[in-house]
Image (tube, rainbow, N blue to C red; front, side, top):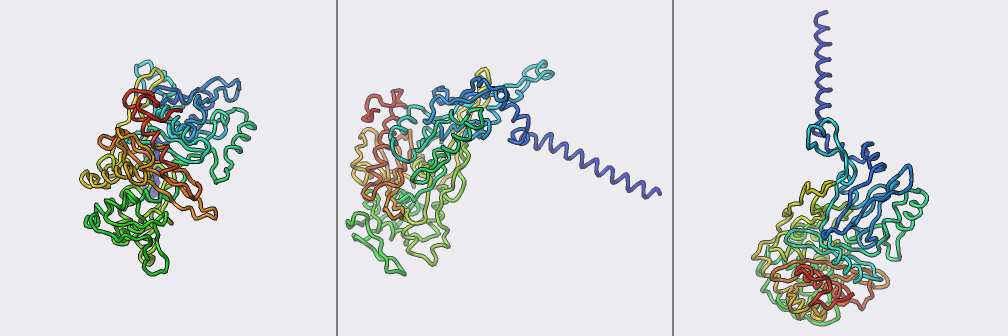
Length: 500
């Protein structure tokens, strides 16, 4: 009898221990996750009943704000004063579709929630309010990107390479987020359907090309091929490749020919500025799949970028094993063609890495979290993400990119001499029946003290278009605008040639 009582007592103690452990887990270790969960009914009620905090730009411009809606069920409506200009980044907080983009990323801050007690009275009677979020986006620079892309699909990403702060991120097509926050479900659903419909190129307005779509990077990838040589086989930096128009590829009758049918070759110091396709294809074969794949991954390919913006796609570079039985593919991959794909954000980070002595800072939008009375609760601290190169290695690449901008494939863009631009163009074939191209440029400036690293992609252009002629003018205007802003001038101030 006593044995049975003992077993029952042990079982009860065991179950009691489980109960205590579960309570401790929920109340302590898992409390933060539960507090932020979209399934938390308290958050859902707060989002519906109370106004959200503001989203502010770097200069204090209001990007998102709550106003009375006149609806009893949803008494507050979210409005976006800059509309399409910041929609892809800020997103929206809709009554029926919930929060998107930064509105979703910082939903727990922007929703009304219990604030830390500042007095004994607040311990007894806690207060609830919403925080505001200030981000790094510069409206003036964002507007330059928007106007530069008028009438064309594409994406622009500009970063401060020293801190990782996103200065601008704009994509076409875009949408007016205030139209999708109508408390009337029928109205909201109708706008949702319109914004979620693809255009002729397969891009819905309700998206962000800069992080959600990948494209073949074309010759902008030659910067990574050069980086691979600098890092793993420096002798290739002085090797002289034959001056030819086309080169035979191993194991096939196919040839890799230079764009435009012009012969090219020589050392990297000549081939990168003029973007020599057969020479870089041969360099890729010399490097091998292991080194190229390792270099691509060290710059962020094949992994999620830790940016505070949900919904990104991952850039792709083939694994080394892919090239064992397909050496021709290795040559094409070395020039960013075929199955290599990158987001605009990824390419901007490559420019930023070269600009920042080989270190990629974690890209971010958050500047600071502000309380309801404007007090700073938390300020973002820049952190390094990846270190693909060191300063000595990047010093071998920077002059080559400067030469691209001075007299190479970007020499006709018209960069201002005082801006000291370092760049690389890219024109990737899409492979469709119309022979369209995806036109790229990556750049940073001033090369001696960079304040901006940038990537621009304009997809599905005509066969006679190039990265220099399509993306180049956008990069030029963005660089001029940011250098002006950094000097305390208007984005189209003295020294700029881009006036909108």
